[in-house]
Structure formats: C-alpha cells, structure tokens
Image (cartoon, rainbow, N blue to C red; front, side, top):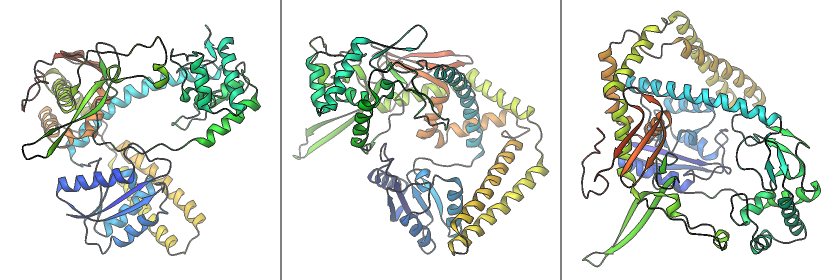
Length: 528
C-alpha cells in the first residue's frame, strides 16, 4: 500500500524518541516490515501540535487529494495533532480524499474483543489509581498549606523537625553562604565545585558535591524563605507558594542574581534515539542489593572465515549497582568503595517473554479466568437498558455540529471569517460536541447485554490470541494494572501483584531453571 508520512517535533520536546531522525527511522522500519511503500515524507521542525499553522502539514493536506495514496502514517498520533478538534477536522478532510491516519506505535482495532478487554483493564486500573492518588494528593496539599515538608529529599541547608517543618542547619548554611559568595565574586561553578571537593563537603546523600549539586542550589528559592509546592505539576492545579514561610539562609539579592545566571545558561534536553524498548523498566528490582534493573546494550565482534568482522549486539537487563562506577567527584572520596552485585545480566527478550507469559497464564486461566468471566456477566446484567431514543437524538445533533464545524472551517480558510470570530464559534461548537460525546458514552452500555459465559470466554480467547495482545501498548497497560514490582535473582523471579488475584494470591514465585541459559531454544517459558 502506498502511503505518505508526516513527522514533527516541537522545540520544547525533542527527546525520548521524538527527534525527526527517530521518527523517520521508525516509520521506515514499520513500512518495510508491513510491506508498505512511503511515497513522500512531510516534516515540520520546531512546530507545536496544538496549532495547525504548520507549513508541511498544510502542504500534505493539500497534496493528499491527488496523491493516489491510501493513508498518512505517523510515529504517534500526537505527531499529527494534539488538539482534538483540529485532529477531527483534518482526519475528515483526509477521509474525503480517500486517506486514513495510521500510527506506528498505536495500532487501532475496532473489534469487540479489543473494546471489551480495554474496558476490563481500564476499569480496574482507574479505580485503584484514582483512589490512591486522591488520598495521597489530599494529604500532601494539607501539609503544603502548612509549609511542611511533603515529599522528596530535604534541601541542603535544612533538616525537618518532628512537626515536618524546615529548620536551618548552621553548618550547612555556612557552606551555602560561602558557595554563593564565591559565585557572586565571579568564580565559575566548576571552580566552586573544586573548592567543595577539596574541603570534603558532602551532600545529604553522603557524596561529595559536584557541579550538578551546586547548580541545583542556585535554583532553590527556599534559601530566601519561599516555600513552594506543585510548581511543575502536570494536573493543572495552581502551585502553593508561601513567602517568608521558612527561615532564610541568603540575602534575596545574592540568590536571585545567581538564579538568573543559571536560568540563562540552561539548555534544552538532548534528543535520544531508542533502539529497543525495555518494557520492564521501573518494575524490576535486584533481590541481592535492592537496586533497580535498567536496559543495557553490549557489543562484541568476531572475525568470520571470509575475513569480514561480524558485530553481535546483545540487549539485557542489568542491576544498577553492578553497572554504577559513581560520579567523578564521588570517586575522589577516600572512603569510596566501588559497588558490587552478584546478579548476572538477564537477556531482555527472554526475560520479557517469561514475565508476560507468567502474567497471562495467571490472569487468563483457572480460577482467575472464571472470575473475569463472572464479573463481565454481572456487569452486563446490572447495566440499565440504554435510553436509545435519547442516544439517537444526541448522535443526530453531534452529526449536525460536525457539519457546522466543517462549514465554519471552510468559511475561515476562504477568508470569509476573521480568526477571532472563527475561534469563538469553534470553541462553542467544540464544547457542545464534547458534552454530547460524554452523554452518549454515559448512556451507552460498555458491556453488551445478554452475553453468556461461553460468549465472554470466546471473546477473551480471541483477544489473547490476537496481534493486539502482543503489542507493547497492551503489555504496558497489563503491567500498570496488575503488577507492583518484580524481583529477580540468578535462580528465581517473584512477581508481586497490586491486589490479590483469585486463586493465586498477591505474588507469583518461579525458578528460572535453565530457561535463560539454553542455546538456540524456542521452548516457551514454563510458567505453570
């Protein structure tokens, strides 16, 4: 199938695989794997997805009509558009031109099995996540309103008393004043770091000061008495800022001079290209030392008989303690002892196959499978009959709004309407459309009424055997919904669940056996 491709990055978000090179590479690899042909790439650099004022994007929409292609492929859907209304409008235009939007990392499937499985996972995950998050946020907000220490490390220069309030540590305060005196006198951060290391000054973690620690000091307004909480919050809640809530260590003029200098020197994050995705990162912990495991790539070369040199790449999970050499300044500490751990590197693909095989076996067999089927049947019977007349009315109104928005956009694009008038009316229509969408979803049954146990079991089996169940997105959701953490040693693995699994309990413990040392073996992991 012939396709067009679109790539975009915004100036404030050029990391974690979002660089143009990473997107182009991912799209080309996907197209080769699926047997498609990319006719042309459209690329917008340093452009936000919240606006449709993108040169290459508009060019792609205009040229799509006569391209003869069947779709637009993007790395992720948010590369196409982040604004829901803009996305719907341009999807509609592409549909009229005979094209659809395809995402490499977010394969969409409208099958009933996918919808049902998504409802099961999302419902359970949302309940446990929201309930816990609500209670935690409530307690943290109350503590913050009293200018008490909420979470995270205590800033250098302070300690926390029995009432969770910040108290100045005189010895550390003297160090901070000397650091800022030197910075204010013209010394560089590197010069001040060398002074701190020479005098053996250590952070709260017990390590010698480095340049990053000095830089962070210049970005902490608590040093002039300002308490702040939630400044970088992503939930839209206003931050809590209380002036003169803490005993200051520095004069405001000295602190803010260095604050402005550090802010001016800041650079954006460097783009990174992920060759492989380590799905278990954040869940894996070493049984010997308690450290987390991270993704690790190693290379080795060996000569062939033909004289060529073959490069072999291996992807593994590695204990953080085993892989840590410590920072340069940390190694200057005469008391520093290199970290050591006995955990061997574990081959990535084998470990992930073992873990997800074990999870799927526990969740979709025996008592647990019976429990899921029973829960789905209960939900289908308890669900009130849908008010179909009202749903049809809402759907009819929603279709009219979609046509109105299309006509409004055409009028704006033909210069028949000012941008202010267009934006005001578009916002009004968009708000009504969102309300109608919510009402339709609320009134519609999320589980088909009248299902039998055999119907549910067949749909579960069909989904588990589908390609969607093997996608990274589904596996991430599976981990986030059920798994608390996973511990590994050289002999065994233990999966701890967030809540008891019927017929199993709150954990699953298995010996590796020889699964991870077999050579050229396609034998699936023994999880039974």
